[in-house]
Image 1 (cartoon, rainbow, N blue to C red):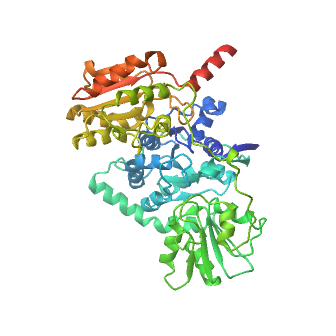
Image 2: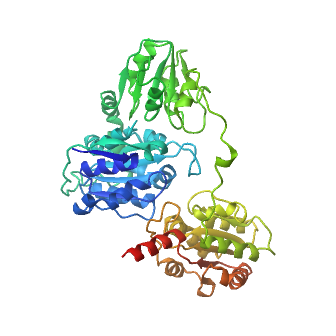
Image 3: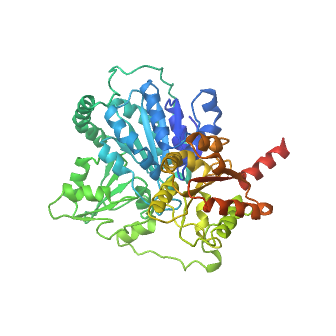
Length: 532
């Protein structure tokens, strides 16, 4: 045993290693990225031969983890909340196939949208998939849940979701490690048809999943992560989910006068909640995300008791929780500081000085002068900053891969030419199928695949697209005459404008690949070369 100072993400990675994991599978996405990065930098992971290579996207990551589980070993798949949308097909069906080796799906939600398109709450996925959900209230619990979650998964033969939020993922605390568990030996499922979801087998598996719900609820009721903590003031009872428990205790120096149900394992433990309802005049639900538990309690207790939370307006409906919001929800007067001086207020993000995207957008804007505004569909990456001044170049950013398919639809509607801007890593994540549609439809669109040789937005992880984009496009059937690589630097500006204009005037599919190394990875690489 040792005491380590770890981010929540790092605690999960170390907990998984100490819990006998044999493989990490993930696609980088803030705030979950550091789980895989910690594993990749760990000497212990390397010595134990634990798999830890980035996958092309979250769906392939989860399916690979499920494959390792099929082979009898413990696996963990990590992603951010919107990544779970990509992996949802595999995630929901994995609850029906069940597992062989333990499988933990870690999902890091991002309330307040610090680096995301929405605030969605992944607990809803776990809830309708009928699997256990673990939600740590601190870094120690994050470690413990990752370490012990595989056994919970194997106990019920289902995946387990481990859900955390940005503030816990990216804050540090002392974590005490426990004894290390050995990796499991490979073994095939006892039921050779367990993973074959033909309708007849799926119906049988689903019945088993339904039949074990009482046992899963009982396990939640008896979980060490869930507690009923009595209080002297029964005027209100509090349900504090995950990190919200810490925010609550910060307001009372660790001694809350009200009865509290600390909730960190789901399904919601009914006996704890019933006790709270029987002893208290009303209930306040504190949860970082959507009002999942608040809605459930309104269903449990359709008896006139007041349930407060995000739905009632006692807690803001949007944004992440913090101790001040909790205090206001309890009617506690708090002292708030002056407004932040303008000189230190947050500024909008901008592209790095020396970034190739700057020269690309300057060339694209000039090339589009004769065609009018509102025809550039973008994707998710650093290049999304092209929506902001001084470029004002792009008109959409919806989800991974949507730039190409939205351009196809816009062209079908008569917006010709339509332009797609997508990054290299995003292209291999979710853009290739859209490009195949464009090839088949012969869509009159220009696809710009911005290749900076890395997954830049999340810190420079290795991209599955590296060195492959041209060949992928050629293999998909893009016409060689309209498949071009350009170098987005100032001295090639006029040439790049000319090439883009030519392709904008072509009445078919064009793919242009602006290729220039990310300035951040370039700087780090040069610094490392000097040291060596």
